[in-house]
Length: 71
Image (cartoon, rainbow, N blue to C red):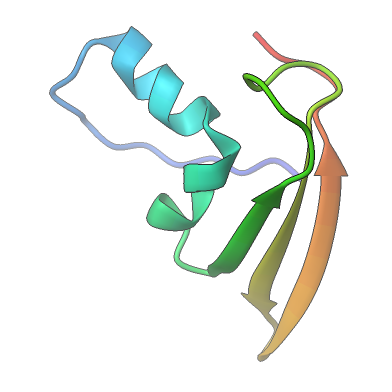
């Protein structure tokens, strides 16, 4: 499932990417995320894993994922 959204941000692209790339901060800009636990250490990369609790369909669901592509 692709998530697509657009917004103008008055920051350099590298700053915006660094913010979006930080898995632990996803709940700050995705309101349906209740909590995030990053399961791997270090910067986000192929192989990074995280577990999120999202409010979807009227209930909280735990979703685990692994980064398979990163650029």
